[in-house]
Image (tube, rainbow, N blue to C red):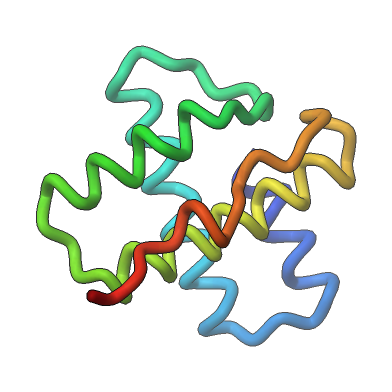
Length: 101
């Protein structure tokens, strides 16, 4: 799934750095799900996003890093919806990005 997303990004002319960033973030997200016993098949659930974000917060990731990862996962979610793997966009930037105090 992540490899297909990478090909999609390449076809749309994203920069090498952008692709590396998105694929790294997406791979880490899928690995997180696997560590929780979830075999990710492309179906996105809101719970996946909130659990991952909470995990990042608990592990003291920088706010800017969390927000970058959320952006990457939002792009992945859009790709999954556009290609029929899942029905809904579950990443909500307004809710999922961390605001600076």
